[in-house]
Image 1 (cartoon, rainbow, N blue to C red):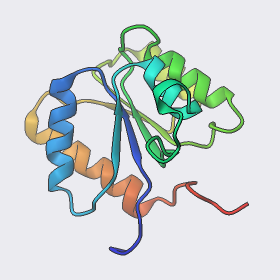
Image 2 (image 1 turned 90 degrees about the horizontal axis):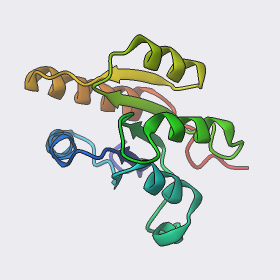
Image 3 (image 1 turned 120 degrees about the vertical axis):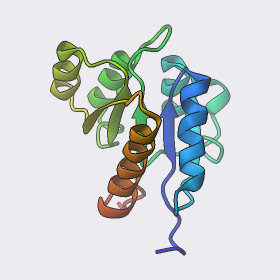
Length: 151
């Protein structure tokens, strides 16, 4: 498995502190997962549609998984999720909402729109590390992602 090129992970997170924490745990992870970051919903959609500064698919590849914060400035994560799951070319991309929101309405709406998982960010640093490692293990070791399928 170490020779296999893992699909990219797109992290849509506006908090530098949260992203740096995520990156720190990712760096400790046993697999080298290529990570791309967008800090708001508009950037994420530009990345996925290869527009604006993300027009080159070499530097903005199709992700194998999207880790999406809900509470973003401008186009928020709810709208990004809606756009992805309404688009026939993007709707098979797995999306994991990774957010501080434990609002039951957010959780229900995200699942109704087709989110693959909804994870509430733990505030405890050890639980956060465990959640990130479990998430990475599940999506990059156990699950078969619809990434780069022939045809």
